[in-house]
Image (cartoon, rainbow, N blue to C red; front, side, top):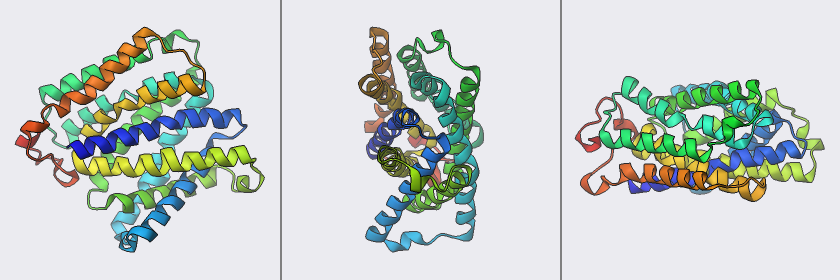
Length: 305
């Protein structure tokens, strides 16, 4: 469990860079679809290099696995990312992050209903702490005059990201993390190239290329591959809870890069989020083995109690 926790935390920190880099991209004159075109194309290339150097057998994938990765990359991931990036065009990063961070609750409920996960008191307590912390961290988000369409995009992003996490656990349970990462990124890159601008590679500025490279490396390769690995170790519900450190990192980055002020209530909120992440891990010393991706369905038993 500790290893899965670490993977989730690193992944969340990398994902936290996404809204910050997108904001910088918009400021540099980039289009949302083009930014994601860069992100997924670079990320797929990086994963390709890793597999070439590490283990070329990871290229092997069944026909069913190929189709499942195509479904996630072309449809689910494209919709979720498009919604999130469009929301960032019109609303603050903090507001978008607050709305997105309703997903641990949605994912856990979905896991209980559809995957047979047993809900225990620690998980409920953790979710309450995380939600309370997020509300405090972004307490002023809804006091701002924000664009209604941007809010709808953010809510759509939350719903589709929740579905994406659950589908990842169900559809990709027989695939290795790097294999799944490569093919999902590949199909996402294709979908965003079609919806973006294939000629952007030739007329983008140096600044835009650097932002695109950062999008591919940080919230691309690092964040996505480690998220898959975390789900494989501890399941999507626990991965989503542990990943809730992301808004804390987003807030810190926004303060440093976007000159946003941090107030006392936001600091208290950060503490609640971090405590909410630690709570499920308190039972680690009483647990011999956490369920893996292949056993985090209806067979989840005493180890998760």
